[in-house]
Every structure is written in C-alpha cells, then in structure tokens.
Image 1 (cartoon, rainbow, N blue to C red):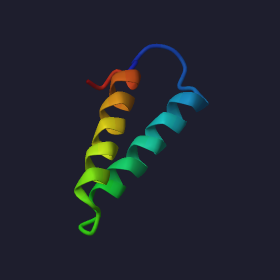
Image 2 (image 1 turned 180 degrees about the vertical axis):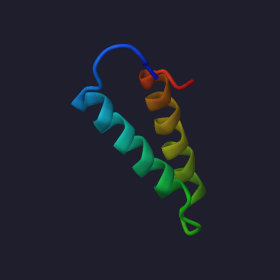
Image 3 (image 1 turned 135 degrees about the vertical axis):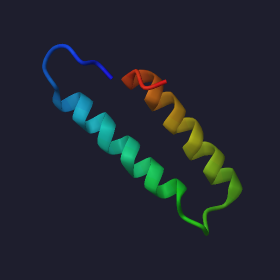
Length: 52
C-alpha cells in the first residue's frame, strides 16, 4: 500500500471491495469455479493497490 500522501475514497473503496471478496471466498458452499474467479479478482485488486 502507499504510505505517502492522503488516503483517498478510491483507496478505501478498493480495500472494502477486497475485504468483501475475501469474505465471499471463505464460503464453504461456493463452487470451485466461482472460487477461482474470486481469487483472480482478489489478485488483480491487490496488484492495483500495491499489495502484491
């Protein structure tokens, strides 16, 4: 994550989306195909945020 500068609404939004996706991934009844899709979205978002 960026440590310098102001914390923006966009950054907050991205973090909340990331948390929501991670929660969805924890669902035991989630089909494997959906898990892969969510994991891919998480990876992409982490790269955008700089958490990779």
